[in-house]
Image 1: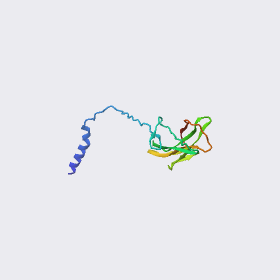
Image 2 (image 1 turned 30 degrees about the vertical axis):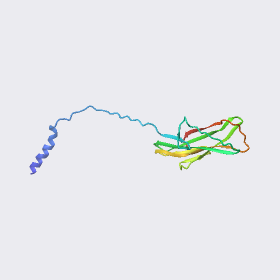
Image 3 (image 1 turned 180 degrees about the horizontal axis):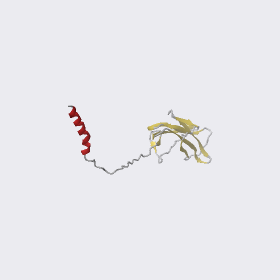
Image 4 (image 1 turned 120 degrees about the horizontal axis):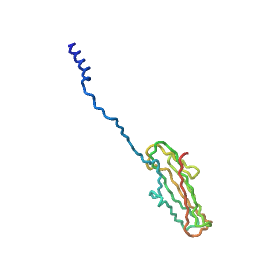
Length: 174
């Protein structure tokens, strides 16, 4: 039994000497290329009816009542979608120009910002300061902007079409 065990061990050790050499292939390098399209942050604006506004239809139309004194408001709602690798802070800064017919006929126009989002603060009455979390975020409410136009009883304005504007600037950082 012992001789059989020794013989089998010797055959196992000599067996690789009789085997053929494995074929050799030239070295190959495979390059992998992938593209991740940027979709870091997208801010959307919605009107009071819930319709998303684009650059072509971003217009607020006011109907002024035929009264001695009045106040008219229109609101816009801001939401964001993001896919960020790290948390970042951004500011939406608003500036308003009064509605006017000409130099003598200018309606008092103001902006009011409000937010229920715990990660959005209203600063200086004209800025949303928002912390955008890392990861995938879809249609997260930032806040509401209300444009307010007022006429007091002692104000006298000429009939006509009044026009004005407000600008929105986005800056990154706190």
